[in-house]
Image (cartoon, rainbow, N blue to C red; front, side, top):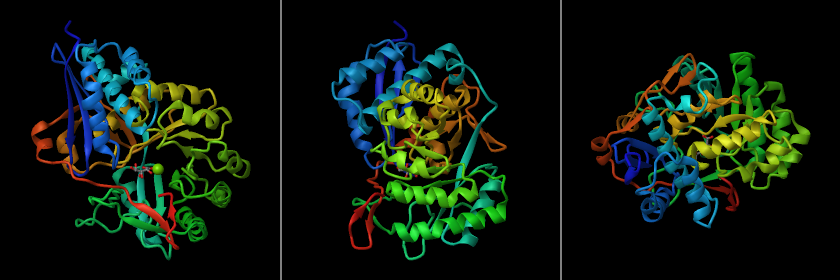
Length: 411
Ligand code: GCO
Ligand code: MG
């Protein structure tokens, strides 16, 4: 029939960074896009899709989203994991894109319609010292952001996660791109005690300068033990954070009990998670306040919607992952979900570069600090093959972290 999948294409391009995109086309010529980008492991997802999924999709009815999801998840026998779940996510999002285009509606309408006028976004401010950080915050406020993530260098450490090394040549942007185009990962250094001594003073300075209203966020990037995280959460309480993110490596969900016992600073976790099972204890015991998963890494809209519905029963909200390693296709999927769900919290928005926006043409808007996916049928993103083909894949990796004595630490 006309809605059967005719072609399956796996597209790899590297405008400002590597992106993997799945493109499905039905017999009737309706095109759906899905994001399959897994930072630093891009080609493994491309292979999973090309070698193992594409042959199963040809001829399937594009309307059968839930059935296709279950078929790929259960049918592989080997479950979960970032590669598998990113591949399933790409199929799922592409199928939602197709269904919404056939319906002639923006995707959020199929998810229940708009629950708000737009999705509150937070931007990434950072600085090597306090004056540079203030400049970066002001720059984000000028761009329209109404919530700001604050990351800072730490005295004695050369390079710290989340801090832009320098201003761009125009001086206007404070870009931070964690993956570097090297064949072997770069190495950074780390010392948790220096970090814990430095960060509270930075937040005190930011609060004094920008006042009590501005929502402030911070990412601990998995580096603390539970008791260190408890200490930081407590020390930051006077500065009223919107959230403290990834305070511990949360594979051990029970570790969060200890953090929670000591601090009322709201906690956000989950950008490296890929199924609802990674959240089970965290949600049921109300150990977190925000779910950080990306649509792209958690099995798509179908699966993330279920995680967020589960979280909603415990008054836990969304904080969908939106760094530059989520492609504009993955971002669009997040924005449609943000608009529709009831338990929306905040959306991360890290702004893609000009080359990326040339490859992925988009219809979203950013007004008064709120993102909106636009009113085009489907996701509202088109892929420009001619532009994409000029940017070949280039190996790029996230850094590795070491303590002062050389021990490998969480990055
Ligand atoms: C965030 C994340 C990212 C990750 C990146 C890794 O909160 O946005 O921590 O910056 O480091 O997604 O690929
Ligand atoms: Mg993070």
